[in-house]
Length: 157
Image 1 (tube, one colour):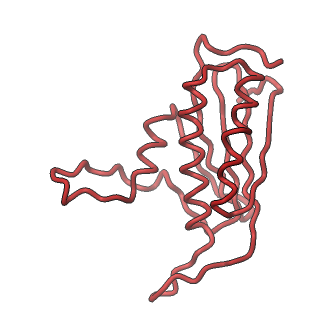
Image 2: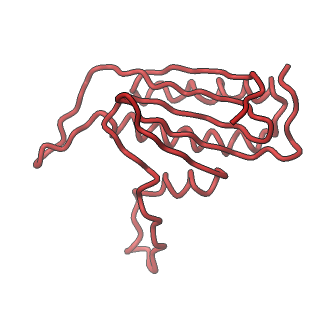
């Protein structure tokens, strides 16, 4: 996909405490590209969900009885690219391979007691994005979140 030459990258470590760096970083890009604020909020939700899941699960490997955690710090790269008709946010991590797109759509529970508190992030990302892609290459997971811009796109400053 062709880019307009606008690209921003944020590199954070795999700790929940650094999630608060995402929103200010996105807001700068949104202002520079003059994009609608509501779109920023929706994309931020998708990025928060994806990165939180990476932080909490990408570096844990089930050993059959418990979860062994890799306590080392790992970098997570968040790359925003402006394309002629869409914005793309790509998230790269070197955790265990996990394709969130392979997770089947969840059925909506009939009762409150049948509802699960977990497993809502991937449906949220599917609902707030126009397209999600995933690939595994050279030991890295790449998740890209796309949102079409339509008439709201302007040239970056």
